[in-house]
Structures are given as structure tokens and as C-alpha cells.
Length: 204
Length: 204
DNA sequence: CATTGAACCGACCGGTTGGTCTGGAATATA
DNA sequence: TATATTCCAGACCAACCGGTCGGTTCAATG
Image (cartoon, rainbow over all chains, first blue to last red; front, side, top):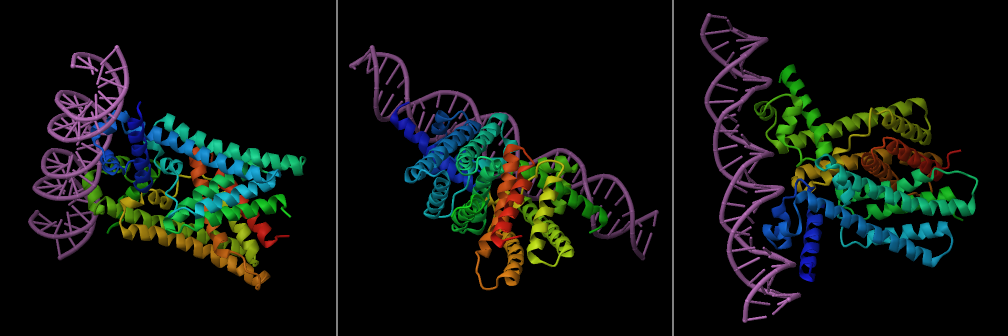
């Protein structure tokens, strides 16, 4: 595929994601998407096998972008300190700042959007969704295990629940921000979670 | 309206809510609903002015049921103790238990579902959604204010954020439970929030 | 028993939707 | 220059969807 095609394809995906996060997957017609992307039906079906194929490629792209974003933030935090707890606290601070610096309210999470229409999709896409959330759990869990390993190897804390709580707060915070049209809520909720982590792991 | 009509109407609403939480509003056709409810098109349009009217009545019903549920739990908690902090902790425990006792995973929150399709709806419905979330904020906020008033009237804590965090954890926990098809996540996340409240307000 | 109105049925309609297909412009390749 | 490939336009189609409408059932009422 040439550069031209690649660019068109990416543009379609970006437009589709933006609209779908506002109207839902079923509520978004292919004509809506091609209208926004400035192409026609022929162009769309040249790049995608159909609407379901678009959904799958959209999700793969979303999870990949998400992974890049989280990895970058965590690496940045790891550059600044060697202490696992401080790394996590910095990570959360950076994420809160990133969410606060968005031009408007967070557009929404594709995983949550698809989850509330999950019966529309096939097993493959539902499993993609699942794997995405499990990847987040794994990422946060690793960091929490480093913290425990360093400061109190004996004591067992509900690490999986604490890891899931971050995803929970993000997903819930996005919904809250969208409903109330208030972009401060999501970063504030992230900082509340950060404070909880501080209290649980006894940050000085 | 007679008892028969009332019953049919309620049945339509119940079926519609159940399906919409699985396929989304746009992904659910009127034929889907009447098929599940065991009636026909004529019956549906006798009770509702159209699909949008159904959406509005669905949301009103959902918010009302939700209010009844929360009020009942809070009243029960208030029966058991006079201390505002203990009331909240009991309330959270009761809610976690209620969520754990569900026959399966939580079916989903209509507010979140509609939020991810909000551009499909008119201002009236979007505002209904908004008022619902604000009602939850108000309910939890009142309880938090009682706690502060009793134990430390001077110190100011971010009560609004703490109140919103409960809704956040509920919304996020529902998404997590649905994605991973694990009904334990939502109650566990509620208990994590409960633990945070304990740490913030220093429960003995 | 005749009438009335609430409750419901199901055929039907116009518009929309996802998807197909043919043609052609631009670009790379031989 | 001839040819093949990439990339896209837009007419077209069958299925579906929200909504309408004339008609039916049935219990209550007079």
C-alpha cells in the first residue's frame, strides 16, 4: 500500500473514531464517516471489507495508541526516579496533567463504547476488548508488585483490585466528564486515586 | 390507563432497557423490543409516541428506580447507626453486597449507555442524563458534609470530588465487570472506594 | 343488546443503510 | 510508450427501520 492510501486509511479511522465516540457504533452510518472524511463509498470499501472490519481495525488502532501513550508516560516517570512508588505517583500526576491539557472534554473510550453495544459484535471483537483491559491490568499490576517487593515483601495487598481501580477510575471519570461536560472531573478523579495509592502505600 | 395497559407498558420498558444495555439504543430496533415483549408494532406505538419518546420514558424510569434503590440503602444504614461516617461505610458495604448478589454481571447503566450515544438524542434527554448524575453527586455530598461537620468542621476536604468518585467507581466498575464478564469486580471496586473513605476520614 | 373506548394487531410505506459493481484517473513498472 | 496496479468516484440494490393506518377484540356501560 502506497503512502496515499495509507493516509486516506488513517484519515477514515480517525474520523470514524471521533464520530463513533459521539453517536455510538450503530448510530454512526458509513455515509456519516465518508462525509466527514471527504471521500465516497467506493473509497471506503476499497480500504475496509465492511463496517465490522472497520470496527476491528478501529479497536486495534485504539489499543495500540493507548499502549504507546501509557508506555511513554511510565517510561518518563521511570526516568525521573528509581523508586517504584514514586514512579507510579509521577505517572499518575503526568496522566492527570495530560487529561487536563486536552483541548476539550475527553472524547471517550472506545472499549467502553463497544462494551455498551457488545452484542452487536462477534466474539473476536469482544475478546479484543477484553484483552485490552487485561493489558492495562497487567501494566499497572507490574508496577504495584515492584512497590510491594521493595517496601514490604511480606504483606499482601489486593494488588489486582488496586490495578483494576485505575482503569475503573479512568473509565468512570470519562463518563462523568462527558455527562457533565466538565473536563476537570477526569484529572481530579485520577488525583483522588493517586491520593488513595499514597495512603495505602504510606508515602511520606 | 387501566391495569392491563400499565402492565404492558412496564413490560415494554423492562424489555427495552435490557436489550438496549446490550446492543445500545441505535443498535436496538423497535422490532427487537416488541419481539422480546411479545407484542406488535401497533401495540408499541399505542403506548409510545416513537423511539425517542421511549428513550425519554426509559431514562425517567431508570433514574426513579435508581433513586429508590439508593434512598432505601441509605435509610437502612441510617437505621443502624447515628454516626455519619459509619452510615456511609455501611451504605457502601450494603451496596457492594447488593452488587455481589446480582444473578449475573451488572446489566449496565443507562446513563453511561446514552452518554456514549449522546449525539443521537436531543437536549432534553441529555439534560435528563446530566440531572441524574448531579442528583447522585448531591446525595453523596450531603452525607460527606455531615461527616465533616461532625468530626472536623474546620478542615476542608475535596468533598465534591470524593462524592463524584463514588459515581465514578460505580460507572467504571460496571464497564470493567461487563468487559471482563466478572461480576466480582464492581463490588470489589466499591469496597476499595470504601477503604479510601476510611483512610481519608480516619476510621478507627 | 347496542355503543363506546381502551388495547392491540399486522400490512404497508418511504427513507435509510450496509454493501456491490463498473468505470476511470493517477501512478508505478516493464 | 505500453501495461499493470493503486486508489477512488458514484450509480445502484436489497434489506431493514421507524412510523402510519385501517381494522379487530373485548370489557364496561347505558
